[in-house]
Length: 417
Figure 1 (cartoon, rainbow, N blue to C red):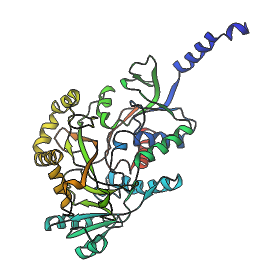
Figure 2: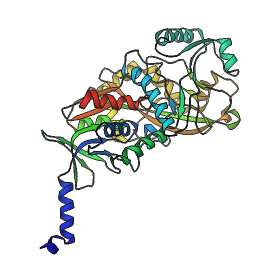
Figure 3: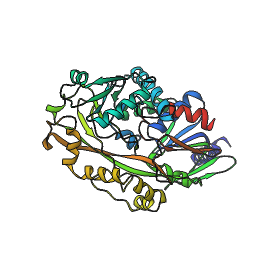
Figure 4: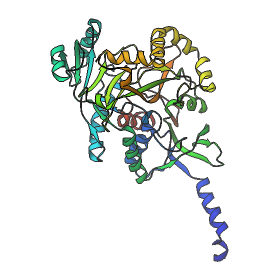
């Protein structure tokens, strides 16, 4: 009898039966920085929990997490009391603490938000007055700016000394390694095709996989695909992800020491985009960008890309047409900048007119997952939706990287547990 039950086929059957009846405590879909940090925080809080992180790509953190400016934000632009504001302020501290603990390179080099005319100076003064009590900001005159950045053209500037730079992809991979070492399972090449919620568990189906994943709680952190996963789960939403492509250029090496700090323009507070800025990177290079043009693909990064499904999702969303009317000037301006290197350069020359077309070279592009509501308005804050067993992170663009730990703690404390 012992030999009979020890046969290899019985062991295989036993293994299949164990996995066929396995129910995870938590399944997280999307291994970007939000999904990774959520898995990490869950494992810290519940070290005996069975947690699986599901990613449709071959590796983690390759979309928004791996294609941003690499800035640790201080939360200057966001409305006081909003999730973006509070999470960013706390996230900056936690980011630096984690990076220092695990020897992830970062530099707290500071940022200047610059005005170049009277209107922009007025906007900056209001922004400074609104945020000075919460953040360690300084308002600098033209002479004070020149003493810090001799090459910079400005009439007024806000100095944010806490703003820094980091490689967010390296940060995310470090968090992921720790989570996996503590027991989190990572499943890649796993494209979710069905989500079914029952009274006992949530079941998800993976493309070309006969097995189904069962979990007590499902957390969807899918970024550019977040609204589609919400639809798969049967929830209706009054927002839709509209993709915006941001193109970056890098400066010639002889211009890499032009500025000591990060240089940002005065923001258009009617949009969630920060404008083309000069960014130093950990590797010593300097980039300018990104633009923010409407994209007709959610994940096409090479040149002008068009995906018919992505385009149809945009055009058949009624909120998009209202958005076109509300933001037509912004959309046209950004499209012109994206398709004209000269106009792109003009944005850079607002701060330093010594640049020429030969000084900037195409670097990369990223695509921002920006939610727009049915009335055609940008969703300005982080946004979540949930059922009894499923939570969807529906709007988590910048500063989501800086805010990743507070976002994941918020999910655990206020949304699911």
